[in-house]
Length: 350
Image 1 (cartoon, rainbow, N blue to C red):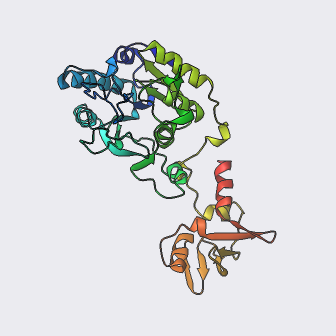
Image 2: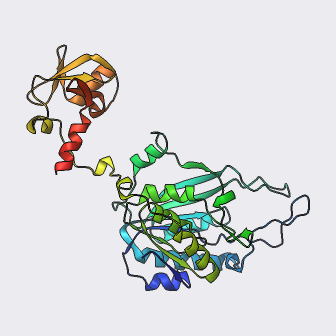
């Protein structure tokens, strides 16, 4: 773990232990099929992707390559593991079909909308302003990681959508060597931040079979994950390792972000049993402190002849679905505090 393995990705994948990786992010060759150099209207040459690793003689050859690396990846993924593959219109549909042929189960496709895409210099097509990521699980129906609440928090408490508006890697983020791009297809860290935060946990193992400039490793290290990189070009291995060596891991206490669905369930009545609250005590409605629900011995609240759970009574008062843990407050030393704080005390004791 936490190494860049130099060599052919298919050969190295086949040498790794089976069922050992939690998450895969793959940025494979796109098979762009560029025939000639590209030039801007002022006749300056475009720094396009014309590397040998992106050239295939036919779609059949590309499909065979894709089938082989996805098959090898499938073996190293845990039964609960998931994979992200990014591509463009040149290859992503072929990749998606092969994923399904191999019995991966597609969970989402994510559209990365670029805020600063490269224009279509010849003016013969629409500007390619997006790329597509496929997110799939190894085994249909298996439990997998999706940190829904972390993604909501990242998106100002709104459920994150499948269209991500993010810029290309430019400026100081773009890794350079002798003044030129160190790698032609470097992905922005913001993209990998969302991928890794959404579908892995602290301490998980993340594999990138096309490591390139090392964005996956850099973000994995920052977020307290372990990484395995595979890269066949020694030049890129050096670039990526130098980059990762400068990254500092975030403090451990900032990385433990348990999803609510995975937390210990604590019924409201447990607060009475533990002595944190008492029958007859009043709880105050967060939106209107003049509304007070009186705690009953069975854990229900009573207000103006109505009685029910903290959720049911809150819903009746608010006129819509709400979470009672968020809506009721108790008084301690003259100050109002959220009852959810008491629930967390009980969770911490378990």
